[in-house]
Image (cartoon, rainbow, N blue to C red; front, top):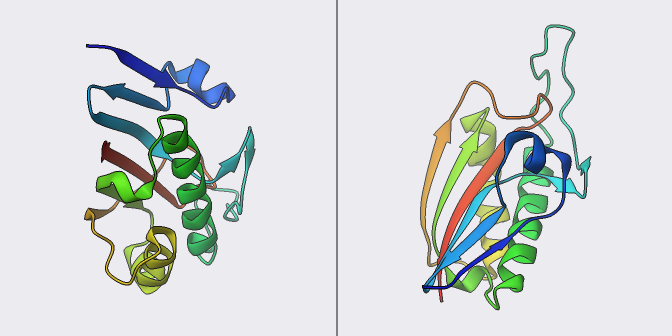
Length: 141
């Protein structure tokens, strides 16, 4: 079975040691995607001196950019968000995420009833201090 991998070439791929996406057969697995454009974080949340996020209002903006990055990776495999069958959403603040989830997800999937299994989980920390959300995807082509 042929295996194809894709990465963005950002420092944390090398530092942590992983690829952004792997295709095995008809399934594409995307690593947790976050809000970045190259090595630059997009819509960073403010972080206090204690390292804790002080404002969650950038959640929707980070989520939108996360979908842009997922779309870019999927395109490299000839796929789109229409091919996503499952997403797992990790957020720092569930209430804020749920208040924007419908709008952001429906716009990303371009339909009022996204045809994707979705799980949302509240977590205490993500990889980067200013990060509010991370989304893992599985697509079938």
